[in-house]
Image (cartoon, rainbow, N blue to C red):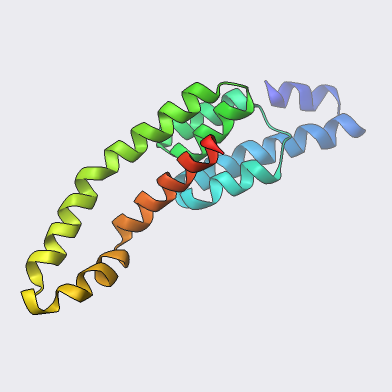
Amino acid sequence: MLLFHFRIFKNGVITSWVRFLVFCILLLQLLCQFERNSVLRFLGTFDSYRVEHCLRKCQEYGIIDAAAFLLERVGDAGSALLLTLSGLNDNFPELESAVESVVSDMSVSASSDHYSTVLKLKEVDRFMEFYDMVLIFFS
């Protein structure tokens, strides 16, 4: 469909606008596939995209923070919060097993190091990202 519009408006401003939209769609697709952590930044930087299409892509690839951002942008803050909380809930089992692994590997005498070691886990980072998103919704 975009190619059809592109052929109709071969010269002028419309052509540039259509090219930019096609570029945004392709860039979002690539970011979703290969650079998931950059999707939210991309969506926050630009606003010349179809929100429904971007939301569908973010949900398809499981990029929760970006999908929540788009839901909030269209005024569905309740769904954005539920999506964020579900992502937080999904990370609890991973977090629990990672912490248990660290604690079981350390000796009892090194118990003061548990906290600093656990904070370095990637599962803790992921959990804290979701936690920060939830705090944003309540502030």
